[in-house]
Length: 616
Image (cartoon, rainbow, N blue to C red; front, side, top):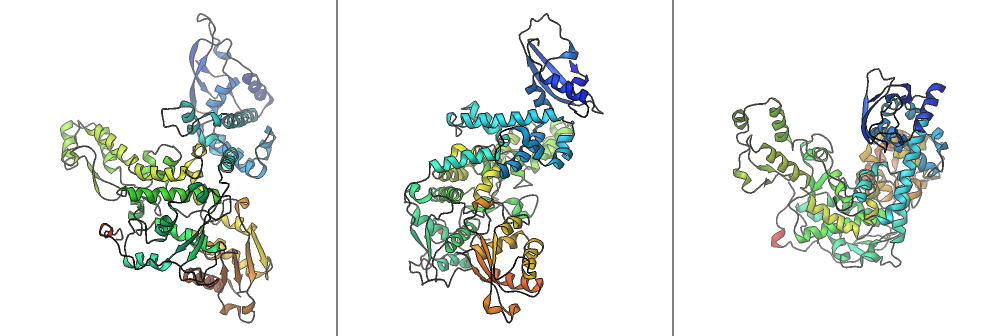
């Protein structure tokens, strides 16, 4: 049955349409047939559009005839047909933007305060001419859904594997419809309730010179003993997890003493150490991660990303992956973000989400080359003999992300791909790619679960959990947040020097240089995600010694105080050259305290099982 009357028009441009919409929204299912499938169309569409199929349930006698012009459909089913998944995403993003500034709304008056440009021009919202009543009803439904999720969350095991709890799976499938303000409210409450009442806060001695030798000698720290990551791992792995890592926001889990350096850790060396540790994690100095195939081949997406190294699955490797998970949990709790370049193949399993073919192609554009070739040949409907001839030399053996040969089945190296087994080949190939990093990611998730309540991480999308751990990087847009969090001393906001500074940050520096500048002045390369997450404001102060010749001096950074002594450079060009040189050549935290003592690791020799290096 097709509903063709103006009853289904969602346009509210005329009072007639508005009344029809109200009338329609009041219909119930009392006179509906027992079961009927209905195709719904919008009458004003130039080309008839079938939006969805709706199953209408009721209890009327089967012999009752249905008047198609007055087909009763519930408001819920109407709205579900009218609003596509993409339209819902737009509505949720607009409400997220509103809630970030004003909190969760108590009524529907907020709709008039949303970004009207998006509401009236977004392709997903304008395609079907939604009326104001439909919009209000859909928002009312979304808010009610969110409040229902909050109510039932304590009763649902969100960590239940797929197939064990339909309620948990349905909530996970709807994670993109849960408002960020609602997630954050539950998340912050969960973090507070599980925060440790007592803290360890040990002093950790780190030998930078010894760790640097790994890079100079192109050696890999397989057992985590020489790198900064390894030194921290060895000194903290046996400490009480709750007291060590479950720390309050804007606090430090430990105090850093750089061996042989003049450091007094008031926050700068701590942030600097975490930043350097993240660089090690993504480098061949540790056996944990490697460049993604797209990164190595400079193809497709994620050309700067890293993925877990599939061959690193020995107990000592998994112990280090688990420790990385603890560091990630600490970053979430303390809001000291970690500059890690992981993709959805890591983040999705952490939140109990499914890794799909698109996630794999995002790290390896060429991985499904044979898969696509089979599909293409199938469309031509060749004879089995011709197909087998075209697939000569292709066996049930492929190269993994690390380039090593992997058999898809027993004796796969000798099993020829043929027309008869092509579906088996494609199934095994897809299954291998999707699960290639399972062992490593499970270890990371195990470490994360020791520090934060995973019950709530399943509410996040993979991008949201990534932002919780890593932030958003340092884009041009982030300069607006940094400027709002900046104070001046010895400079005025209206000074030409300050105007040049913000022009440099926005228009001259790229994202990498902006991150490098933040690391130079704060010891960390990622900004907090919001103003409320800043532990301190950024200070731009005068440079008293440069008064007579400002262009002859370099800036001085104070990472503990998140500040920079900035000479009053006469031109933008001079400023860019001086600051660029300083942040590229003055990366060490030094000269602000007494010499720190501690054990040096540079002379430690590698054992026989650590002679293999992952450096190219």
